[in-house]
Length: 146
Image 1 (cartoon, helix red, strand yellow):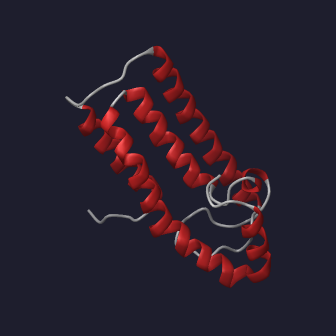
Image 2 (tube, rainbow, N blue to C red):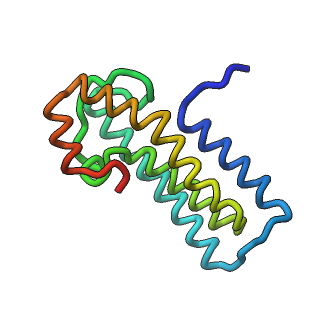
């Protein structure tokens, strides 16, 4: 089977790694961590859905590596240039908290670097080519992550 280079696959790989790291490693436990984890996962999924709705309404693609047809600057894109990837990070952080796997914390910066280098930086280049000054102006006002 061929690896498809999309963020959900990277997130799934990190969730699998979290499960492996959680087996026998140091753990934190408690209902607070469980509740925090579930909240982060739900909020991450909601943020992703909200972002996709805005992209679909603008008739542009949420699929990475494709040329966008519109610059989306409303909704969740008012506070993050990459709310879908932020949602990925929230889901992984929530899974780490919910699982209690302390070593899982190591996966967070790893996923952040992968998303930034494999997806965000190339997308920023495509957006600059496609929308020039409009994108650059928006990028100066809105942070890459938060």
